[in-house]
Length: 507
Image 1 (tube, helix red, strand yellow):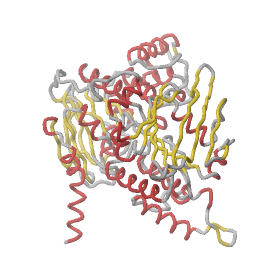
Image 2: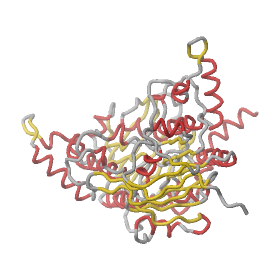
Image 3: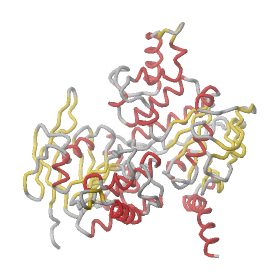
Image 4: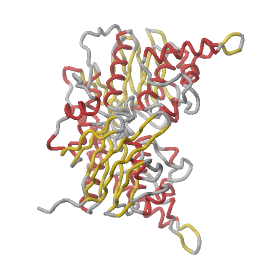
């Protein structure tokens, strides 16, 4: 049997930042044509290592060899020229340009000195068809959802002839159908000899796609193992340095009360269907469905972020008039958006400011801020939610994904929200931080809050929710009780309306 060929040799890579060692003498070999998975908690060193390989960071110590030749990129352009391309978790698209322009921005086809838009759009359409994205090449990126933007990023990377493709949390917002398609693409790339470095917090999927797994913790390599020779509990133990009893802390003892929130015949612009559902006090209601199924759109209409065309909302039996998010917040309904960086936080402001923004009247007097009250409020939630930060003055930008999510939650709790709608609450968050978020959800439910969780991660919904409502093509296809949870059953409901449409077209 031929010994696999090393395409990357990482030797003793070390990277320091003020007060922090992000990478500590990391040694790692990557083989040509393999899918090499990197796992570890946020702050373990995964992103720093990727940024060294892509030329964003230069190491303080150590060397990297690429196909046997010393490799030391000084900027991302050097990595791209060498055939190393990264699809980052934090999307890097130009919102007001078209999908086509974003994908081929660095090499727009030209004719007689002008952009050849026919070729640009035709090439883009082929690429979109390849990744299963049914969109027009001319559509501007700002009109896309998070999952669609993620697929455009992947298409952008695939448009290059890359030897090494680095995927950072590529499935964080994708549904099972899109993930299956992505894995098919990855397998095709492997057959062409392309090497994939794959970062994911979804431990179950890495066994389907990965050849080898490297675990990082506190900037150091713990171990590299064949996926066929390691289990999820073993990986988790290596990642967090301790055993976790369960990935999902479902608590049977939490009592579900009477109906608290009721939504009747809610419809939004662009969807001819209407939706009705209710949630009880202390209940965790899961919301499943394919991207574009109407799950997020319905909750945004409920919150007043998108205009609704019909429908009534009741809280504790009282009808609420909601025209915009301000109305929703005043009635105690809040939405923790899937895009926490773009819509949930002011990244270049402190944790203190982010927490107080939703309730400035509580920390001001006669129109003047009372900064000591603002600091006290933030300090309370930093302690209560175990937000890991050196100071409340630290900018939100510099917190890990899990701690950023906690800050978003803190600002709504400070507003004393009664109904909390979480859209992809653990997107891009590591195993340990996910567990903490789940525990917080249960703590809130136990305190009588109404919790709605939208997620593309079915095992997550099945692990923490009392009940799952499934959307399909803009309507509720069905509900599944906890005693009847079954992944196949939920997926069948998610595809139900699309199958009906397909059958009608055939007939």
